[in-house]
Image (tube, rainbow, N blue to C red; front, side):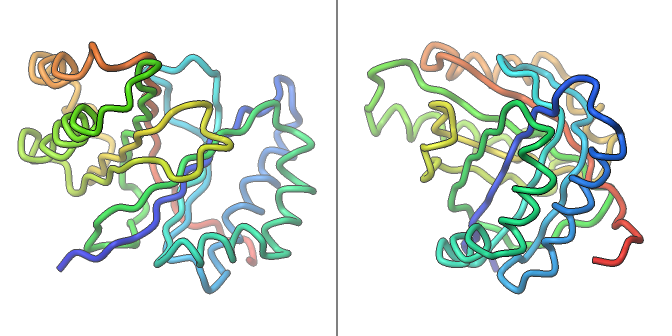
Length: 219
């Protein structure tokens, strides 16, 4: 049985030539936030690759919550603020964040799962609710077309301040990297889905990420 969850994605652009130890400290600090009781699921690490993006992001954080209030409590928590101040801001040139409400029967995702993250920016002036629903319906139907996808999460962003104008987001979750690679092997089907909404979009971000094994460091 599906229940509603809050999805929270943050993209980071680490400054070039940053000391690898400082990047490791940022990732360790971000992953330590799984200990906060508001957090259902949290993973942070380097992106596997960028399929399409006007911004050169390097790292990703994905977390899930039971409610918007829990997300707010996480955001305002002293531990979160300390990690951002001490480990994130000193080494990052750019940060982008998107939040949405989604249906999920499995809030927690196992290590090794592969994620295809997509953000959509609609053409300027496109406020037609029917057109937005058309886009969301296309995303929601992807799982039926590609059965290797374990879970598809999608929705409209409700936190515009740091989203750079991207208003619709989705995550396709697959068992592992091999399934993610196989997804792209069927290029005709992939292009067919893109063609359904291409004329409605100004810009697209597509990123791949594999959930790493939990770190052994004390959190």
